[in-house]
Length: 112
View (cartoon, rainbow, N blue to C red):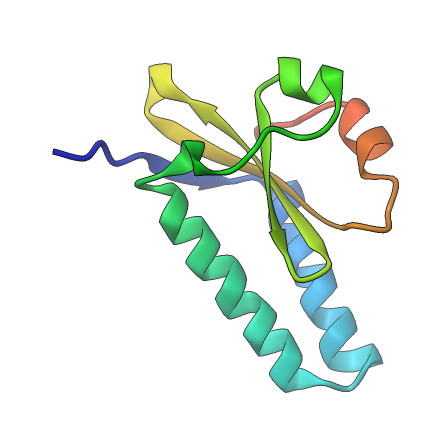
C-alpha cells in the first residue's frame, strides 16, 4: 500500500503562485497561459501526495541540508519540504528561475 502525504501550502507559496499567474494574465495579457500554469502547479502538487521523493533536492548545500526539493514547472521552481514525521509535504515557495531564489530561500522558510 502506498503512503499518502498531506499537502500544506504556505502563504508565501500561495502569494508567489498568485503573483506569477496575475503577471502572465494581466501584464503579458495571456490568460490561457496563466490557466495552464495553474493547472500544471495543481498537477505537480497532487503528485506530491504519493511520490514526494521523486524530485531532486535544491542545488545548494544549505537548502539541501534543510531538505528542500524542487520541481521545474516551465520557468518556475516549485520548492517543497517533506516531513515524514508529520506525514506532510510543505509547499514553501514558487519562484521564477531567474530570480535570486537561493538568496530568497536562505532568508528563511516560514511554514505559515
